[in-house]
Amino acid sequence: MEGDIEESKDIDQSTMSKRQRKRLQKRQFFVEHRKIKRKEKKERKKAEKRKLQAEKETEDGQEGVSSASDNLTNNKEKLFCEKKKKFRSMNSEHASSLRVAIDLSFDDLMTDRDIHKLLKQIQRTYSINRRADRPIQLYLTSFGGRSKTILDEIQCKYTSWDVHIKEESYGDVFSQEDVVYLTSDSPYVLSEVDESKAYIIGGLVDHNHHKGLCYRLAVERGIAHARLPISECVKLKSRTVITVNHVFEIMLLYSQTKDWKESLVQVLPARKMEGATENGGHKKTENGAQKDEIAEEETDKSIEGNDEYYSLQDLN
Ligand SMILES: C[S@@+](CC[C@H](N)C(=O)[O-])C[C@H]1O[C@@H](n2cnc3c(N)ncnc32)[C@H](O)[C@@H]1O
Image 1 (cartoon, rainbow, N blue to C red):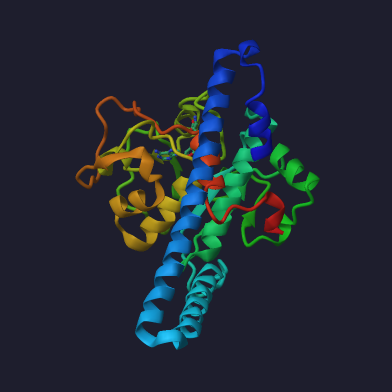
Image 2: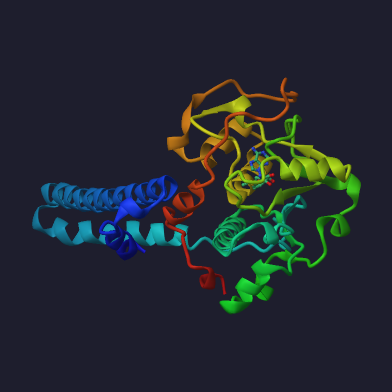
């Protein structure tokens, strides 16, 4: 991936559209930034190691060298154990009864590239749920379109995932009175998460090309809808339309903490925040739809920038 970017520096940008140039520059900035961050992290680790060793040597003389390295090994082991946190099944006694479904009925509205992005978001969602103390009942509904074909093509063994996979639409899986469609365009703010409900997230990566689509569909179908209390709790530099995995992670964290602000701050990328506002509750916004929205292009950054980034096949 980084090789592509290095090569792309030599590309004649004069033949590109303004949009293509902008996208390329954004990507180059991201890759450069990631390189610097990795280098800084490496240097920090080295410095910590040196400090630890020096402290030990001062305390214990030469003998300290071996015990300091023992300490380091112990720390590493601890870290490793934390990373390798035991998976908790949705069927376990610890699991939550809360249902959250990703509605995969929008495949025809997306390019293959965007479906890939969506699948990465689903992969991240799945991975987070598996490591949760109280995993949510995660559903994929309307599964059978292009996203299924892509998963089949890469021989992804999704049938063994700990997810409720349904070909039927969410309307056929849940009773209508239980359903709440999550959409940033709803005038209603989600104040509580009701464990008896089924919350639906639109499986859509659309770069704002289908603005208000999920809201319109929910209204047409007479389904309850709500938006997350983002603008009530935190101030963002950009849009409040967030990615599928971020919506899921916020729902998961809130179901455990019952604190919107805490959940939002934990999940949303820090660079997106301007600062926090008072915690909000039940409110109907004056003009209905939200005006400021988070850039969806963050999908790749937030997922690729994460240590838990795997390729789709790794889910097998
Ligand atoms: C990238 S958004 C898709 C935006 C799309 N234009 C639409 O009509 O919803 C993916 C999904 O995440 C959920 N979502 C994103 N931001 C949200 C917010 N602020 N509140 C509630 N749900 C949100 C919605 O379910 C949405 O369909």
